[in-house]
Length: 361
Image (tube, helix red, strand yellow):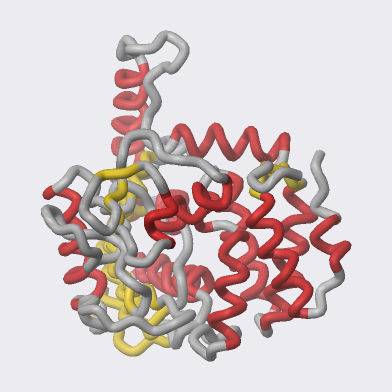
């Protein structure tokens, strides 16, 4: 393999490797299954930045006592359709999964539920939670913020980073079990994980979503790994900047964690979130909502494309299509990512063949 060669790995062996790694981290079985499913699922739908490539960072966080395998979502307050959880620095994928399962049970009491999660480990791909909620008949609106991690996003008009990529997610159910509408976006021009993936693959970005340390726009992900460091631009300039600030207040302050004000902790990443769930099923509006979703989808897809080879897509179509393709042909990982996974496996005493089993199809 060349320095940036991409290697497709079979899904199930890669999932098994991830499970074995998480067990070695100290996760118990249900926790490991939820986290592994989330990580591999992120790779399957094309979000490699939130997939198995995160495992080496998790290993370092555990070693630094900043991530706690076995920690669960702790309910600290339940009142009038509001559930507030402390993530206890557990795996965010597991913490949020269980917090949402508790929220789904609230449909017996309330048609609108607000869930906050503070002090959680990395929550991964937020769209996973939107899909979970939509499958249960809920409209989902989520805001996420970050603490501890070095800031990577510059405020609009600035050349130094002060914010994180603070994602926003909205999911609306489709009809008859069909696919949901999904908006899952960083409030930055590109997610930091995608910068990492681009660097590992030796690629540059289309357009210039980054700025170097002098404030000049650039397409080179290396600027985020240099000293002095560059930054990521806001999505949509002042609009994405305002959304990022909203995430700090809604996810950080409303959850009780507070906004990010510059404190950096090595090998640590804390996510905080606020989710709003509207029970479309119990309200009796799910069929109409689903029909509206499907009819709007059909109408927009019929829009004449600029490029005849690239028909207009509905939000979430790219993830659905990528999931089908990668399930069939495998999950591509860059050589640098594979090397990092192998080094981690060696340090944990996991047999080298266990990663090699995830061989090309």
